[in-house]
Amino acid sequence: MRKTFQLHVEGKHPERVLDAVKHDIRKYIKRERRRDVPEGAQFWDFDCRFGLSQGVAQAVHVSQLTECINAVVAQGEPQFYVEILAKPGHRAPRSPESDAQAVEADDELI
Image (cartoon, rainbow, N blue to C red; front, side, top):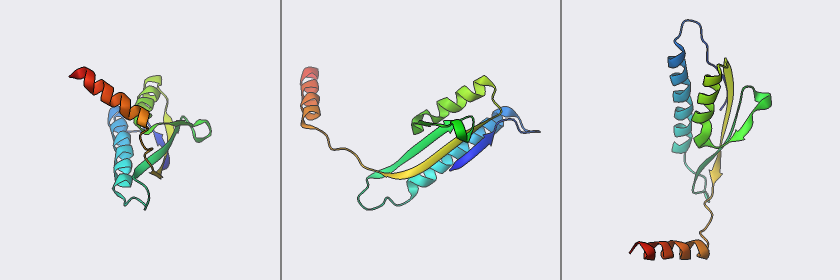
């Protein structure tokens, strides 16, 4: 998804437009996560970029998109650009050190 969203649409209430934009983004992410994961991958990961325009968009984490949108709305900007690209994700194996720390933390709780 590569799209510039307009926040000020004539004849529509700004809060409803904002809700519709957030809904479209969430719907796209859910739709991409429902697709079959390629062989060798464990999940769908997302490369996201956000900015006032395509030229100034910067990389952000998918969980920060709503915060970025809210910041743009608070500044009173008329539009913003979002780019969300799905890619196969791979979880890194846990290291023995992190396993040992988890066991020590469990022992402290007992």
